[in-house]
Length: 405
Picture 1 (cartoon, rainbow, N blue to C red):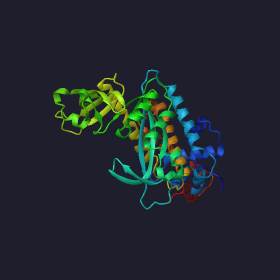
Picture 2 (tube, rainbow, N blue to C red):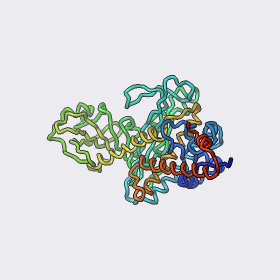
Picture 3 (cartoon, one colour):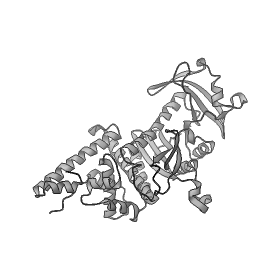
């Protein structure tokens, strides 16, 4: 029987080659298989399912060895991916475009019965309101012009995980976020750091200022301000605000009733804090938005902060469409390498989307995934036709595709 393979996506092959990774062709082919498989696999995206999509007659061990045994550095691959994507962005945006570096953390949840996977611990889930058996990953994301790109990630491990090396190696989530800030290179002159309430500490915001980035982010209701020199929490101060003291502000498609306060908070001598309500009677849940850039208008602060949603959308695509937390791997080396492949897949899809947005009508990442899944069906049709021409039986084709009759 002649050896017949499913045609790989030329776009994926070209992208991996553009990264100019100093690895063998065989190893780069593994990356092509992983990226293509992550995109086209529907349902559970374990290594076996991913490899069966484009690598006929290969079993799960091929992917497992690539992730766990082969000699390559996911940190270096991530570095090359980020450098390439930022160069692409730099060549396609205007110098005056405002960029947004977004930092948050996400949980990769596992069943409580899972005991052999390294690095798992109980972490609090803000969305679920409870602790979850999971990996906690602090990540960075970049939004500028048409681009919305994942950047880097840092696994958060509790102090006890490091044993007697904890003093040297342990970093809390704030410190991991500061590492992500330090490693980022902006492509235009103006960049804002966007964070949620868990990352608006005075230490982190001052660190961002030293790097040249103003911060816009939510703050918790117990944060202390000093209106008129009087120490009070923002929650307590809000009880004295009347509707007549608010302004109706539109940001994008949303409208808010906003009270603007400017003054000292924590380690910052001066910052803007917006007290925001959606209802005219100020009866709904109050949001507190801080900006270290006091020159921005109220509308600009709210409009800029809306870009933080990009990282939430990225988490949704990573988990629901790209299998970020569906790995069945035990070692942290393999897991981090798998995450590297998910990030490289997301980056490839986003760069392709922006480049082909008009011609292929790709409005979002979901459209782009759909496009490549249709292309995969075309490759399956070509594969089946080639098999028929070469006298391969239907049963043999089904076996090659790894599907049940």
